[in-house]
Amino acid sequence: MGKKIVIVGGGIAGMSAGIYAQKCGFDSVIYEKHSVAGGECTGWMREKHYIDNCICWMTGAKEGYDIYPMWKELGFIPEGVQVHQHDYFYKSELNGQSLYLWRDLKRAEADMIALSPEDKKEIKKFFKHVKYAECLQVPAKKPTDMMNLFDWTDLGLKMIKMVPVINKYGKVTLKELGARFKHPLIKKIFSDYLPEEYLAHIMMNAYGAISSGGGGIPLGGSFAAAQRMRKIYESLGGTILLNQDVSEICIENGHSSGIILSDGTKVDADYVICTTDPHFAFEKLMDYKYMPPLLKKAYEDPEHNPLISSFQAAYSYDGMTDEVKGRMFFDCKPFDLCGRPVTRMNLKNYTFEKTTLPDGKNLLQVKLLEPESEYLWWEKLYNTDKAAYDAEKDRVAKDVEKAIIERFPFMEGKLTLLNTWTPVTYNRYCNAYRGVFMTFLQTHGSMNAMAVPGVLKGVNNVFIASQWLLIGGGLPGAMVMGKFAVQRILKKEKRSIKI
Image 1: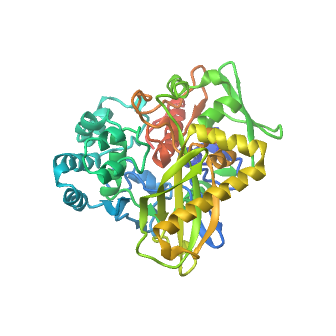
Image 2: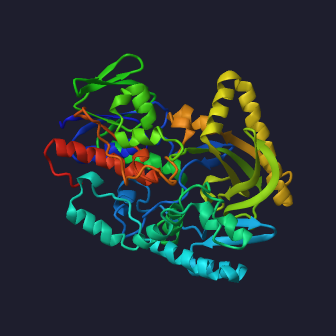
Image 3: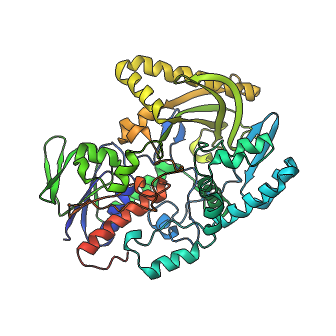
């Protein structure tokens, strides 16, 4: 029996750590507070409709990318699971005109030039650099702080085309990028999907992931993928204990003896990997003084590291339509959300998920991005008047439905609200700080590091693993950080870190 690793949190980072721990001969146990594994990589059923909460696209899920083997071995794209490739990133409408960011970059470029010939120079430059961004790699072989000259050279050569992307767009916000164009729809398309203060190259990286063919979605959704991951972990001999809330990671004199559960039970361990939301980890489970300096600096500088969450609503549409496919944005009559007017709608149709919907019906999902201040608005309402909180969710959902019907009149009488959720939902179920489902926005002055090392100064056997530690976050960040935590333990054990 190998040394015991206790893993706090059964999300993607936790199960990634567990799988690699088992493969390396350790005896691992995952403690998860929720009744299901997967964390924010999840979905749920409402009136026989599957509602997905996570995967919009994968990154590097294709031969030639360092992270591709992880997508396969962690259960996201195993043999027999079909991957849906997007026809386009998203569609934007304005003043009766529409524009698609097609997966086929040449087609998208031609459409944009046809819409606005006077913007041809900037359009061609944009698409040339999106093509360059297809080379983006998620560091997946080992932690960046453990890489040697040969590792950096290998990674650098693979990503050599990212140099002009960063040089041209690395300090340009999406708002500034849009301002380079004359046509109002082209200006708008760059501020639709992500907040306009976001750095432009991040949007280009996402678009490049899709245009590369490595940014598809595994059919069956996020919940199915997370449960495949759990089965892999358990098949390797790992144990995952659900409905087990951890109240403390025991640290004394620079060493952890294990964890304490909320019922007072002490669990001994040789190593602890904490994969919870890091703010929750250092506020509730450990002392804030152990937080890595880079991470602490980001939390303490919200001006340059802003946070974003969302209000979301899902509807059943009784019928089939070709007018709504994928994700689209369009103007709507203003309605109130936390005291501000919403004038732009973000609508996604899950027509590609045929096996998760009743026959003859579609799922429409709306995501309205919200800043940190609106999380605090929802939190106050939830804590002071739960009935008012629920009523406000329903009120916003009705306004959203009106906006959808105004754009698509044929849907009147055919929409049924299935579910609504707010930033508070993410906090309640996953301890997500401020209800954030990704990580810090990347703006001018953001945390300047490819990755935050998952080590604690002054503690020799506790490691953290979270998507928050890798710029961009998301599933790739969670997957690799779980693996990296195990590699740090292997190094402590003076073993090869190659997994």
